[in-house]
Amino acid sequence: MMKKISEIDLKQSLDKKTYKKKLELLQCEILNAQQFLFNEKIGLIIVFEGMDAAGKGGAIKRITERIDPRGYVVHPISAPQPHELRYNYMHRFWRKLPQHGQIAIFDRSWYGRVLVERIEGFATDNEWKRAYAEINNFEKLLTDENYIILKFWIHVDKNEQLKRFEERARNPYKAWKLTEEDWRNRAKFDSYEEAANDMFAKTDSEQAPWVLVPGNDKLFARIYILEQTIAHIKKEVKRRGKMLTNIIECTSEDNTPEEKVKVKNDNNTKKEKNN
Image (cartoon, rainbow, N blue to C red; front, side, top):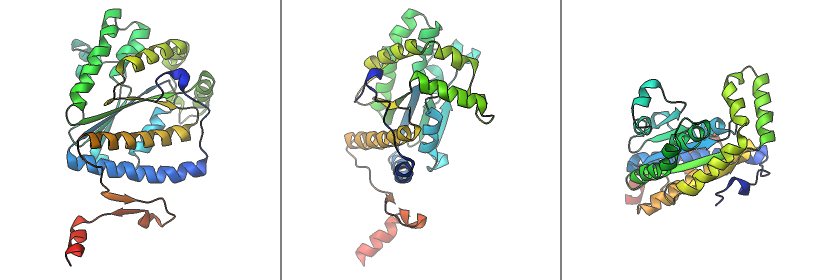
């Protein structure tokens, strides 16, 4: 698995026809996983970090588009509010953890301490350097219990980022996404890459791994993220001595929409076996 930005192949892409076919099946599998985790009371935490305009929002939309809205929450993380500064920096994230059986998605996260706070000088050298161990302890505490954690870094190169910035500036429906802070961060692109590589090296673990995502092609990135999410859930469920069963049956055959997703009725299945 890639663990340095220089190892990411940003040329990877996916055609729209293949994307649509894979998306439908993978979204069904995510829905199935959500229902399974709910029944087993296992919480899922997905962290998204990456360069500005890398496609975090689009990826989050594809994960949540078809799942039960009662079972997940998305937390967009920005700078801490004045009252939050009265506490340890991890305090506000503890308050946002999902219940067992629920899903929490973090659009930016506690890793801000070793990224933007490090680069912009909002944290002292001692604060951000000791944060690696603090974060590892935090995540281990959760994964040793009933939580699954997966962390994505979506990466785009400088040219692709500039292209997306300019597209946002021209589009009245997306202009709100582009801020002066984005332009300031772009000027420190190389510094963010350096900090990100340090972060991968010091906070990647088997139970809470970093997945580096080629983001220049949005379609490829979305499918890759869905695939990696499902694979990690299966792995972590197996580590707990369980197996991800099909509560919802997903098929990639060219059936009607009603036939593509079949909800199993366990009671009826049992009756049929007994008859």
